Image (cartoon, rainbow, N blue to C red; front, side, top):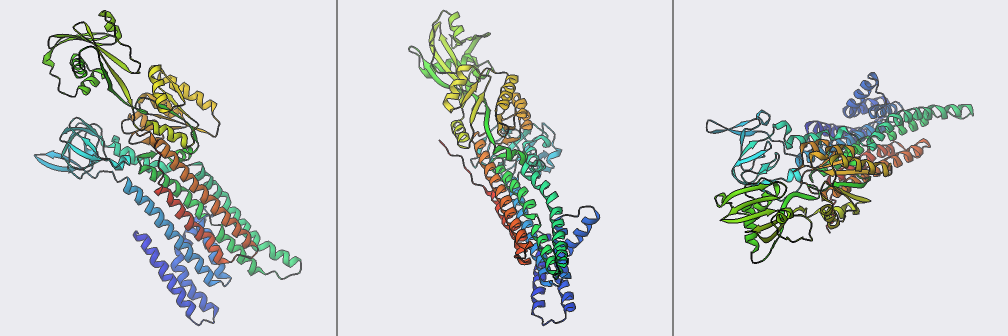
Length: 627
């Protein structure tokens, strides 16, 4: 509880004690009673009265401060001293509770996103010196000690350690890093000493971008929030006019009919409706619900750039995915080794890796990684690159040819045609066919569960767009259970396909596109909702996206949809509950069946219950079912 909240608590306690003391005194003079009740009234309500007066002078008359001031001052004038002070007291109790709830939600989100580094260590004259992270230039070597946060994105130059990435990705599993590995800011160094060469300025590092996304998310309001803002703009003046009519019209009608006017009765009823009508429950709880939903998503590594995107997720019926880097790892791996003749599989891999040792092609790298040992290039001689075919080289004196089927045909050799999809590297040794290695872009282990989770979450159609060859694309689509696959597409073709889907869907339905590469940025911008893979994705894709998945886990898409639906459910519950109670109490209050104490519940009680309900969004526990 901060100092402002503590002061309010003291005022509430003091005011409540004074009310009890006054009620225990044997007072017979109403003027003395009024003067005594004015003390707790001003103790608890002076700030409300001040805001109401300032609002009138600034042209912002119809707000909750004006309603409270008008209702309580009117009650005091009519001799309802206890009711007038009680209304102000309970209103301030509700405001204190609301302030505490909102503050706690913000602190929880700040704790979940406590990744902003306070300093960076650099070596100066043989000693570690702490400097501001934004003073570090690109290319500077910084030192991260065990227990410290990585302040800026970079590459490990020296050392090895384990990083806790939970603040970024929501995953508790630590990540091992060694020399040459890229690291992102916001991770916590758990064990070893790391020397990191910075690759970005602090303002462009991951930690800064994440904090900017979360802090600015409240700027983009949902339709529900905009509705409540418009509703309150017309609702409050209408209620004030209705209260005025209720206070004046019935007494005049009574006088015309020859009955007693009963001014005090109708004025009290009018003041009661003013207390009931305060729209605090809606104005406070709706934004708080979205704030909680965005915070809850952030704690799971799902960064939503605005409540409008969180709301749109609940209406998503079409999800279009890029393949490479989204549903697959985007890393080529040797998935099968098929030797032919007397040669063994290990020897086949050894010969292929050595023959390709001088190439930087992704396929050559995957062969060397599969071999897993240091390649002694001194054992390789007379390397000959054959464009579009492969490579020839002498390995330990043996002539090795590694490449595609065209290379084998040029050597007059017949090669096997594998049934599996992927890139085949055929190998010949001393002009004899020795077998092939199959290299594939490996499907992410949870990709199939992600597609199933999307359908479970209400998605009508999952579409995969890729520039890969048709056989490869169709094999991946069949493995994952994707509904529609479009292959051999250029970046412009992806936009065309998405626009066709947008034109065909119902207007109320939303389409989300999920991608990771820089070539996906145009499609991310064109879709109703753009979702980018943040951990390995390009900066351009992250900038263009509306939602960022920090751990590249496609299952998080369905989880985000479930968080969205739960948040929207809470929002709708609060709207229906608050309006139902208020309109019912307004109707009963107009006919005298509801007194000022019920009015306090209709205002403060409903606000407290709505705020309590809204905070559930922060602690949402939705999970994606695995298949």
